[in-house]
Image 1 (cartoon, helix red, strand yellow):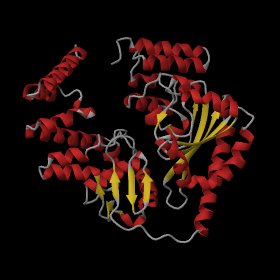
Image 2 (image 1 turned 135 degrees about the vertical axis):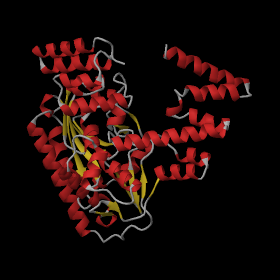
Image 3 (image 1 turned 180 degrees about the vertical axis):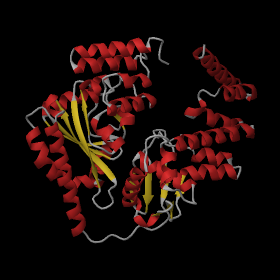
Length: 431
């Protein structure tokens, strides 16, 4: 919670802009992560909108600004397999010719990520690469925005848009010595997001010329992939029921046959809403469900056009927008289990909250409905084993009534002691 000095902190941050822009941004960052200014007060600072929104998401996801830039997301031995299976592997000669060769002696690194933010390749200047190891900027590390906070490749993937992040605009302090420019890469046939290409280095990296260079490289890479697609044997159309995965901390995915497609946040929102409204949604209604202030019909039509390229034009009908293909989802499986009264199965399927990164009011309502219904069902069973499983989830950690029920109902002294200790901790935290 921000302290009462919020307005004063924001004013101090604005006042510091009389010095360098870097010093001004650094001052805002220190005040923000210390709780001296809250998320709403960032609007009155010199920060760019893309940075303001990313810092808010980073804070909401619990990214530690004092932690290294990222954490491992895969065991190191699996990186070779990930590289071999990734579509950008075939485009490495193009990327090396256009970017890496000139970066080797210029203090610049070229990073290539998967769609989920995993660093697959980091090449370029050897000295820069050794320096970057201190912030875990190495193959196999998770540089998604949810894993590392504000950074060019992670934020570019989160927004599905090209991004430049300069110095102190990074959320993690260890990364603030660097500048970076990243552009997302798409499958040329489906337009599905498949990764990002990033340049990381000194001040020269955060320039319009660098952005133009990375953008041109991505165009060349996508053209290369399109040419490969034309010369490859035709693959069979995916069969089976498509599956939508939207619960928990993993990136939302659309799985159809052998294709596993990482979805943007907006596309995941739309697919969830369409799955919950089989009767269909007009463009106006869908815009309102996604954002009750800023979306218009033109934006919705553009998003739906891109979504059709990802999941197949035959899967979505317009006027109204509705799914024409039966799909399964982990969300529906939890609701279905609850409808059957099978609370244990519902807990098995519930891997975490629904689309935690979504700002859609309709998704937020559905997220709350799901968690509340599951909690109530667990409490109604009176089964302490199910209750303990609920309390082990992130939503259950602060559930005082649940911990009280566990304390009062447990026969084992150790479990009662654990519940008592947790209750004391909650009361201490709440004052």
